[in-house]
Length: 186
Image (cartoon, rainbow, N blue to C red):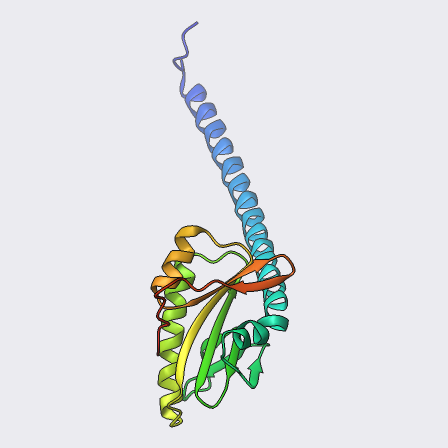
């Protein structure tokens, strides 16, 4: 049977059907897009919750881990340290900040750190250094990345960047410092 329309009416009927199909398709796309938005929001919320859980695992024992290394920090901001600009806008946040009279240790906590997290922490430490300079605080700033799950590539990149690496080990965190490790200083 030939599918070629035989009259103007047939052509108009086919065009109306095609229009109906396109409209249905557009509606389906809108529904799918909205469902994707909801899913992305839920995933973002879940990711934030995992990050909070990781912070709660790290914070209680972090003093002891650094004290074992001879870094006796006497102050800790476990709920986060916020840096604001002149307009009071947040320009950086540090998950855990440890301090003593000579050093500041800025710790970024991730459930599973990625390379982009390491790069972002370097930027964060530069902002922290600039902020502390404005307040005439010349203490040395070091950085650390803590994670429940560390990939070897991410661990190597963090160490190469001069960060202490804290890894989940059973019910505590451990700091494994390789030979010839030189902590970065900001």
